[in-house]
Length: 173
Image (cartoon, rainbow, N blue to C red; front, side, top):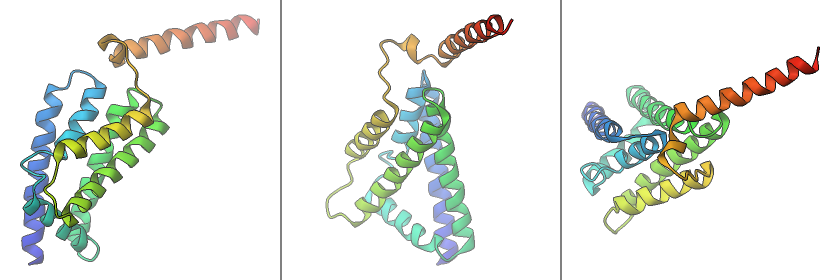
């Protein structure tokens, strides 16, 4: 049964990866990339009772079976990395790491909660909860798509930094 659970987990991880990549390809800016990762984790074909039960069994198995633990670490690192990548283009990296940790904990927690719930999984509600958390942590209030463009934001930072360094250089003369 250990081998069967590990094979099932590998298959589920591949499906999860495809669901996320599919959504990432449609993302037009960093915030949409974060949303794609969140939504991919609650894809309707994955977020259903039988699959949720398999994930719960895998979480339990990961505590004692080295191969299962290794797969879980890969999943957890990939989830965090994807979230941090998108968020760090929008907010300072330390805040992005904290927001990604919280979002990942919410994602895993919601999977566990629905595994133990009597009612049917609700992907929209789960996505909404994680999105709300990310929004509250990142305080992203863009007024236009141009504001969300990381290249434009980087250029603005570079200009401000250049001006500040110029002022310092003149002040020390």
